[in-house]
Length: 228
Length: 228
Image (cartoon, rainbow over all chains, first blue to last red; front, side, top):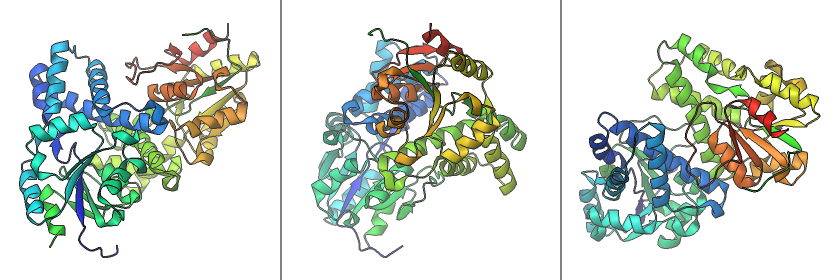
């Protein structure tokens, strides 16, 4: 792969990368003992699946990420045979609006800020839920941009979704570093043209889609190695 | 929902609807005792996931279904920590080319033929793998059309993929019955405009995407109830 100069700016995926989407398993396990992990996993899988189905089917089928997140929870509970009371639903959705932040993230964002490198989020999340979660996590002052695919009515990995980052930060895409813990997102962003870092927190195999991210790491700290 | 006249023709999804994609679990279980179901399930999930990712990302990323099926197998084995020898890979891919047919299918196709109703497959599968599987299953003489999304370089639920059926059988789409056991496929086809029957073999909950298929059944025999 060709040598690339250090990027001008960094765009982070939000869900799974800055925020731990499986942190809802704790709340889920209190509501449904022994089933918390299964519910958190299926909820996440369904949420992603629904973004893809509506995006592939055309912008007239777009629904905001928060709606999709709720529908995915309701489906998952039904599929697993869990009786989700209105109170339980509210508790879980509230947990999703207040996801945990991975422990190294604040330090990494602070270090990028100290070096004067512009940063942002580029997320499937709709603006309102992103705003709540970013604020709750105390990341507001550390990010220059909080960008949502929402105006495009398309979800990642549709190129229109990634283009939101270029429109906000200027091109070319290869001068922007896109960071995701979701292997499919890192690959979609590579296809789009970003320089990419896959933060493979779980040691997952590379998705076999004929493309690899430019860089791979294991925590968000690996972002800093790309700014020597 | 408005009353619709009996459809002019019937299009069937192939994988999961006519062919039992989980029939590979038997071979997988012989190769990896106790892990056959897990491998068959993840293999199928990854295969579908990859069709969506390449389709969303643009036609330049299209790869034929057979290639995607192989890559999904390799990923799934690695993810599950299963050592897949070249011989084991060949055995499993061969099993996928010779999937079981659900027991009622021959009878249903024969009954439609006896009534003079045109029938076809409309599948994500590429033409070569479809031809092998249809022939091996003895369905060749019972289907008027074996249609693949392949020429469009898009997978379901992209409207271009469903349009293949209208192009072959003539419109409007609402006069064609599309039959799928995959809930997401039945919903995508409903969005597209087909009259739809979801053959919910496993008693799964309806996907929460804001749309329901026009009809729901539990075996392929329910197709015949729509031709009174």
